[in-house]
Length: 280
Image (cartoon, rainbow, N blue to C red; front, side, top):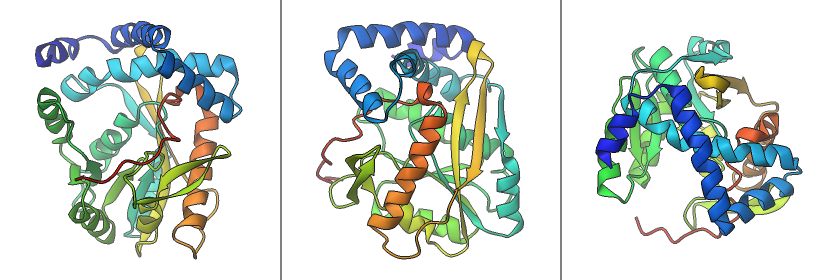
C-alpha cells in the first residue's frame, strides 16, 4: 500500500481528482449506510439534493489527493484573508484556527505553515491521533513532520501543548465538528439536531491573547489547486458558559462556513453518532 501511495504522489492533481470522483461514486453506489448518511445529513441542513450529490465526487477527491499532499510536490495554494493572520501576529497573539470537514482540511494547516510557520514562535500545532494501521502510521507521521507544522497527542499533555502554543503566539488548528470521546464534549445543535460537540475549542478560544479565525480549504476545479479562506468570527464567543453557550456559537459558525460551499462538505461523516469511550 505504501508503494501505491508513493506512485500516486507523482500523479498530477487533476488526474487524482478525476480518479477520486469515480471512487466517490463507486462507494456511494455500493454502500447503503454511506449513501443514507450523506443524503440524510444534507437534508437535515436544508441543502439541495444537487449540492448533496455534488459532494459525492468531492469526498472521493479528498481521499485521492492525499498521496500528492503527503508525499508529492507542492500544489498551488493561496490564502484569502491572510491579512487577518498578519493582524493577529502584529498584536503578538496566538491564533486558534477552527475548520470544519469542508473542502481540503488537510491543506489549511500546511498553507499556514508554509507562509507563516517559519517565523520564530509561529509554528502551527495540530492534534494528532496516529492511525491504527501500521503502514498508514508511517505515511501520516512523515506527512506531519514539516517545517512550521507540529503535532500534539490527543491526551491531556497534548492539550497543554496547544495552550502553550497559543500563549506564546503560535497557531493551533482544530476540527470542532469532529465527535470527541465521551466526557470531552456536550450535546448542542448542529443544523438543528443534537450533536456531541467538543468543548476543547471553546476552552482554547478563552486562552488569554488568542485570536479565533475560521478557515477552510476550497478545492478548485481542474486540479488547479486550493484557496484557503480565512475569516474572523462574525460575533465574539459568549464570555460565560464554557460548555453550552460558546460551543453552540462555534457550531453555528461552522454551519455558516458549510453553507457557503455545501458541495464540498463531508456529509457522510457520522456527525450525530454517540461518542466512544476514551480508552487512550
